[in-house]
Image (cartoon, rainbow, N blue to C red; front, side):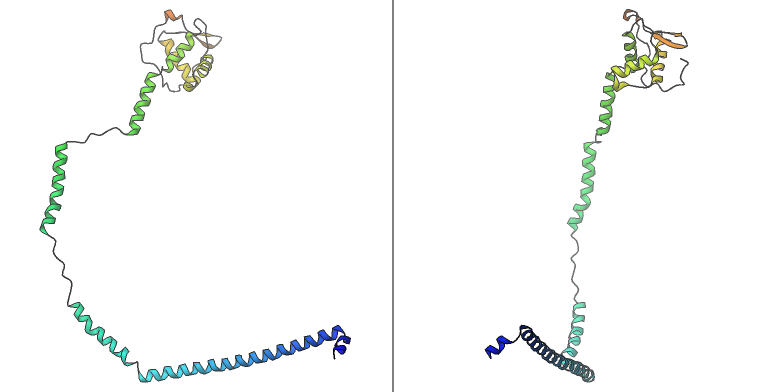
Amino acid sequence: MADASKNTPIQNRYAEQFAADREANRKEQESVSAQITELQGRLKQLKADELLLSDMQGLVGPPAEQQSAPAVLETNAPAEATSPQAVPPPRQETRTKETAAPSRAKKTARARGPRKVTPSAPKKAAAKTDAKKSAEPSLSELVLGLLLAHAGEPRITREVHADLEAAHPERATTVQTVRNILDSLANKKVIEKEKKQGSAMYTAPKPADVTPPSEPAVDDLHEKVPATA
């Protein structure tokens, strides 16, 4: 037999093995199918028995234990309802202390007098800013100082404005505001104003001849209609 198996082609041996495995698979399928059919029949019988038992229980009624339970609850309910918990009334002493507390607080407040209102932080900051501004030279003083730096030399408004932006960039303003300041100084006879070739020229005298303006410095001059240059 060993010699016969050795002489059998390998394809035939694989074919026989596959055929045997397929036959075993079919037999296992049949066995499983039979078990499934049996279980399905058992499940169907159990459901039918459940329906029959439910109908019979409805005819007989619930067990004796379940029938006696509601009676016990009903007998206990009135007992609980007839025994409410007693709430002790509040003590008179506590009420007296509560009513006396507000009156004591009022007397203490009257004895202390009115409360002092301290300025808030924004007001303090605004006050510091105003004090700082008052310590700085006015815009009119700065413009006059720039003209005095070129005493005796006629200068136009744009030249003075350019000097202001270069020397004091933090106080820079518009050309019209500088013109208004120069016109105000000229009206007060602090500087001289003349027109040459259609342009207004402003000249500052020597420092010894300068008299400070009698009116407060013009810092917040509003924009006016541009005067003829």
